[in-house]
Image (tube, rainbow, N blue to C red):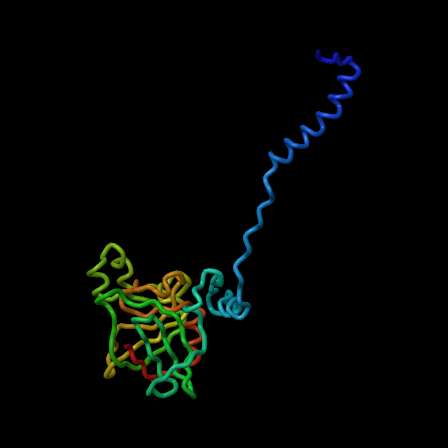
Length: 223
């Protein structure tokens, strides 16, 4: 026979059971706290090198260091070459510029290069340098993409929207302008790609650095 539980006893029994039942519900319903994703580590030297430049003729936006591939960051590397210090060597396959230094070293910069069939190859000389250069598309560029380039046939003044960026080094061969340049870009995400109309593009912070180190008359070797 079942034992009859009086109302007062039933209430006391419920008072003991309910808290335990509610506690069990809370334990199963609450998800464990999720660990927060760690922020990408930022090298302070890299952050400083690619910070915004506010002291130039036009402002140069900073490059987010967390978006930079380590291979594209300006750095001193071992580099065996027969070229003399001060020579610029452009490796279009690896997409690097090397500024040859003493002692088997070179300053290496990540670059963007020309599309297949538009690359410059051989030896040239830096016959002209310009800060915030004026840009004029070549006749070939206008012929290939008239919708994009015809409106700039008369040229574009230097500035933050100019595709040559903050600096340009003009490559000559046998005293004649090859129409190829080493220049800055306002699209740092294109560094490491084959995307330009033949010229060698660098992050603005890098081309400013290279410009300051290279005199007019410097030898350029494009591999």
